[in-house]
Image 1: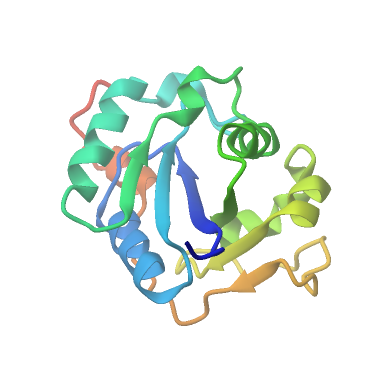
Image 2: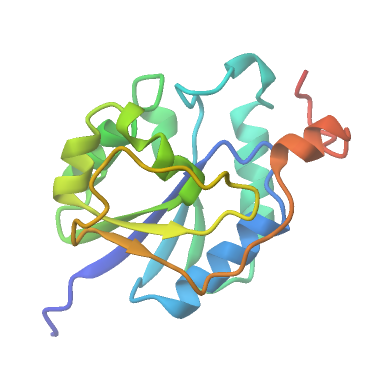
Length: 181
């Protein structure tokens, strides 16, 4: 048996709704990095977002499951559904490590999140204990991050594709037919 530690990417989000940008990125990440699997972690309650605007979590999970069906090594996950809310990434990563001690977790975030990463609860803990893959966001404002980007744990996926779409735009255009308000 090899001593290769199973490498899991954690791509969290509200996925309200999930769209081809999320799916395209997930597919690219699993095909172009050293990850063995990518878990699209549906967040029941992102502390930086208004919970009232979210479609029901089971609906969003079902949509993500449907969207990634047939993509090898990419799975929809409801892991955060059983954790205390709101969902803080540091707590989620701790719980994942406890549940899967033999796995190595890598956080996958957009560069727009990197500019506000210092606002995340226990961001230093995340930086110290996990790799972070940062994908480019077409719509992201190029702002200086207030954290040290020279840490070995931040890896920029510079050749990842960008997708000119957002869940916010889809909700505004009322393309999302979930039960969100």
